[in-house]
Amino acid sequence: MSLPLVTHPHYSYDFEDKHRFPMQKFRLLYEYLQHQGIATPSNTYRPGSAKMQLLETAHCSDYLQRFVNNKLDKKELRRMGLPWSAGLVRRTLISPVGTLLTCHLAIKHGIACHLAGGTHHAHYDYASGFCILNDLAIAANSLLSHGSASKVLIFDLDVHQGDGTARILADQQNVFTCSVHCEKNFPARKAQSDLDINIPVGANNDIYLQLMADGLEQALALSQPDFVIYDAGVDIFADDPLGLINVTMDGIRARDHHVLKRCLDLKIPVATVIGGGYDKDQRALAMRHAIAVEEAHKLLPT
Image 1: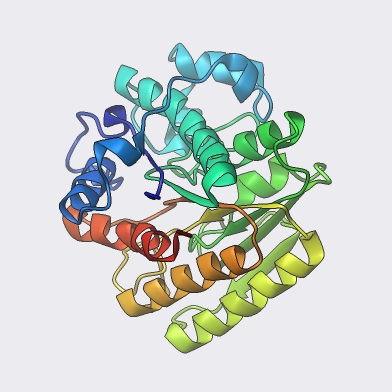
Image 2: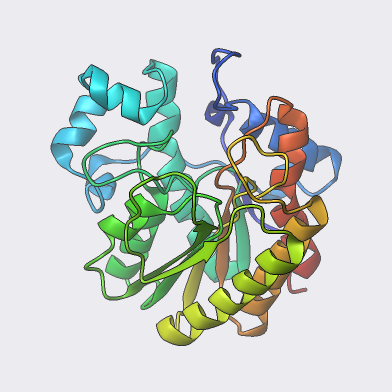
C-alpha cells in the first residue's frame, strides 16, 4: 500500500522572493518526494476549494467574507503577515480541505500526509503569523460533526505555540490540544492549550526529544484519542531563522519517527501536516519538511 499524499499546485504561486515566508516550499517538497519515489500519480490526492459552511465551523463569517473580498484593514493585513492577492485566496481556501482529506485518508489507511497545513495561528476572526484559516480546528470539528472520530488529539510540534487552535477549540470537549513549543518565541501572549509543553531556548536534541516524548504520553493519556492530527513543524531546526531551538536533522527524524510509530503501535490513525519552517534555501527547507513523510513511508502498515 502506498502512503497517501495530499497536495495542490496552487499551494505555491507567484510570490515575492524577498518575503520571509517561503511560498515555494510546497512545490519543492512535492518535487523532492517525486524524486525519492515516494510521491507518484497513484498516491497523490488533490483537494478542492472549501465551501463557506465548512470554514464557518471554526471561523467568523464576517471575517471570511472580508478576507476573500480584500476588505481587511491595514492593521489586519499587517497581523496576517502576507500580502493579499487572488493567489493567496485561492490557496488559502484549498488548504483546509487538504487537511480534512488527509484525515479521511488516514482513517482509511492508518496514516496520510498533507504537504501543507498547520496554520495554527489563525484565530476565529483574524489572521496572524502567516496563518489565515485554521485547518487543524476546521478538520477536527468536521471529523467530530460527521462522526468520523469521537476524540481528536492535535499534537502540535511547531516551534511556535498553536495559540489560534487552542482558543478556537477551548470549549470543544472532544478535541485535545497539545502544543510543544519554545517558551520564549512567538506569540508573545500565549493561549492556554489543554496541555502546553514549554521548551527552553537553545534546547538540544536530548532535551527536546525527552520533553516531547513525555508530552506525547501525557497527551495520549489525558485525551484517549481515536484520531491524531500531527503538526510536524520543522522550525525547531537549529538554523531556522525563527526557531531559537537547536535540534538537528537527525533530531527531527527521531521526533517524527517516535510520534508516528507511537500512534501506529496504538492503532490510532494519524494525519500529518507540515507546519512551520523558514529558510532562504527553500530546497533545503523542503527536504526537512520531507522527513515526516519519509518516516511515515517507512512505517506504513503493509
